[in-house]
Figure 1 (cartoon, rainbow, N blue to C red):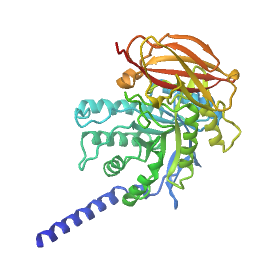
Figure 2 (cartoon, rainbow, N blue to C red; figure 1 turned 90 degrees about the horizontal axis):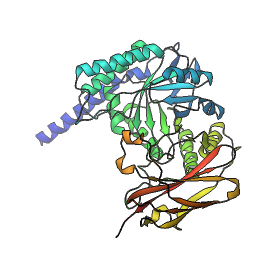
Figure 3 (spheres, rainbow, N blue to C red; figure 1 turned 30 degrees about the horizontal axis):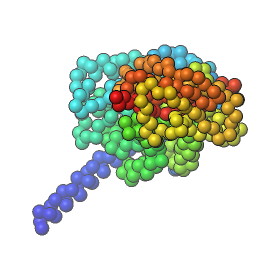
Figure 4 (spheres, helix red, strand yellow; figure 1 turned 120 degrees about the horizontal axis):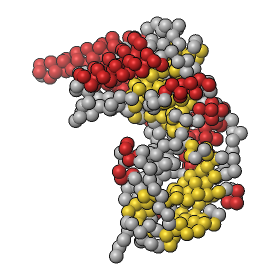
Length: 443
């Protein structure tokens, strides 16, 4: 009995020490704010408020590196840049379009099995390179804040390690070189483990940012649990949009099934409502993903621009930002069929067969649009950063086209493929849909 009492007392003491330690580490969040800074975050009775040039600023923008003018025209006020290549030109372009810039500072991700932060000389090179970057751009009037790393796999550990030591040194360095702009870091989803570990080991971070897609609805629940330990934390949504390729149904050969652009509009509407109507005064805004063209699983999954055309999704984003319904749905796209079957039917063809594809609309007249068709070999099974950037060659196997239909000969080489339809109107807008299929040689 005495042994059990001793163990319970010890556990209770450790919990008290831990909570006291956390409290001491985070007292800085409630301290007086220097309101002479260019950008600062101030705690209030409800949560937090971001200020820029002395004026309350709510982040309403996108993540990407192009089409600055178009972003401003639809009501955006901020853009997140993922790398520092051509940063000077990007900052100037943002300034011309009255956009505030969140600058990502790329750092290597942490892996327990392969810790890139174990070498002191490498860490010195990383920090010195960042020091030069911050000194060069800290006074640019378009700068909003620094984002230290994107999904860096911040470890959940009891004691600080070499990664955390370097991470904190970089935060301190940025604060010393540029006290006028906050420092944040982006986390995949709202990982409670990462948030708790960053809270404990990196109290110098000014705010958090979360890359959230289909899991956005769980943000409030996770953050409310965190608040029981540490109180409310300031944050913004650094990436949000339709379901990612890791969150959707798959074929029997594991090819992800991409939503149509019209389905993405529905998801965008629902998720923006979650962001803006969750009554969380600690949320400082959000950035839709991806403002430009990006090959991620497919070339259409997140891309809001293609070949100087803009996705129909952008019209809905403008409606949401401007709190208007002036932009009506453009295409009313339902789905694509291959030989009267949909993607969930696990479509398998023999090589060299004549097949037909059809795009089905709810209302629009097919005479008012132009459809471009392409077939590509799949790359989902070889999905590394390097391969995502490699151009892929379309398979030339179409025979003829008629309005919303196309006939094609299935590829001769066995393997997974995907057929794309790009639907264009006469005003520079596009919609997209695609269907995976498999070519299997049974002979």
